[in-house]
Image (cartoon, rainbow, N blue to C red):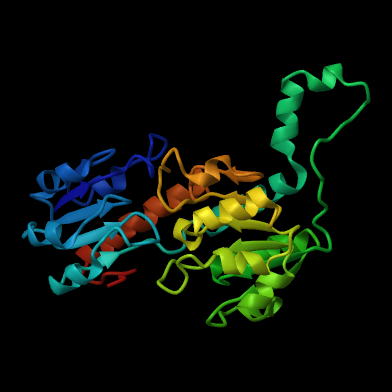
Length: 316
């Protein structure tokens, strides 16, 4: 079996091993694949693995040998799944590897907004404490989480994990999900608008669908309290970015912590890059070594299951 990995660098920048995948066939691994190189590199592939490199209908129609597509992530919008289904090519994903890592970064963003640890540490490095007239100082409000309300939109595995962590900090948890998931009985389920209106912190953990795209917009932002914080470690297009930038700059809400943007990498003129009290990290919530090792193991298991005639984690 000829296996081609189109963009393996973010999964494995050198601290993991591809050996288990290589044991399954002839394996060629590329760190990155420009759009113009997809067909040339995939021409002899029986199996393609991709993280963010797009596989369009035109690509699939031009790859007659292709029998399998494995996405090295949970989201699969980089693949035309309908076109793959039309050719009886299974598309698989890795659904559960990053729950703990993403929940951890969600709380890290919240704690930075609440305590401004990174900011104040930088002022110390800049020599300000050594020059200070008092034994301590702070420039920004320091927020105690105990007793505040965390609102969660999307109560799947990650949403529930975030809720449990927030409870450990003494926060009250409200949640909204279109489907009541198993294990959600620990949290109070309410209408979506209620979550916006009553939350001191709103955290997004829902999938990107036509219904959730631009879930955060001028109208929903107007429902939020002026002291509220927004966290997004889910999907960038859940947020209408100009509307959020305007809300931050005008003081309509107090701050935002984002690990995802609508376009990644962002354009230099993205308004959130210069918005007031907006912390942005470069889509790293998934990327602990432990999470990437789980992703690698499941991705290899997906290929192995396909070869055994019992494909798993098929999304089309």
